[in-house]
Length: 318
Image: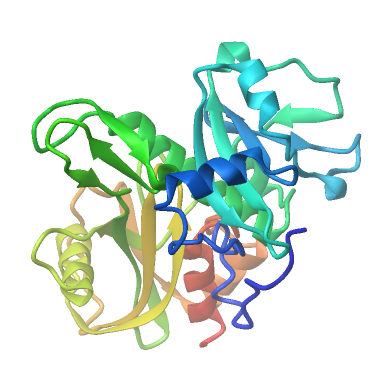
């Protein structure tokens, strides 16, 4: 049974993909024999991904009853003998949970309204799963993606093999260990008096304005990265950067580090290569965007994104 041991009291901490309650068993998973025993255990279960889409049991037309389709591990071999399998952790009852990725062409057909392969964005946007289930799937998707894109050793070029239940890869030639990559991304609300800075990129849906964001570069602190990104993209100088909350983002494997920042002044010098537009919005405007009644039809990102919660924190002066 997946319980609520991973529950967090801070509402801003429970972002989409951040509610994973599994014990990752770091002190046990390096033992290949232990992993093998977990795979053979009667209570072990696996969620099967067909490409980027996990199998979800939707329970008919009632979306509220949707849940992960946990299967016995023998089902994976029957679907695809070459499937990639990784250990996710132990549930509250000590039962092992795994994830597997099969070739999309080998995905089993399922009755309509029973088991469907649904992408993670749709699951989060439509709020089809519990936070704990979505957190487990985010972990699984990031880990499976990393294995698919890191098959060769960066040290000597030889092929690597999965090790420690999938929590690392080992090179058979030089013995070098490789660990899953997480890319840190700063995402910021810059505020000045009762206004905040929001921008949009060309690929955003029409009318959507969001917090500015960018990857942390080598040799930077988080605060330096936040200041650099806002200055580069919008020409705004930050004189204070404060941590708000973070969100795992499995597309493919980023960590969104949310900050509330204070701008030295309300100026703009937009880099049009980075942003289609950026504007200073009053607190009342932001509230109307969140409520869906902005006079220009402008909107914020959906609740699945940390950007929404940062914008709401500014609107509610939290």
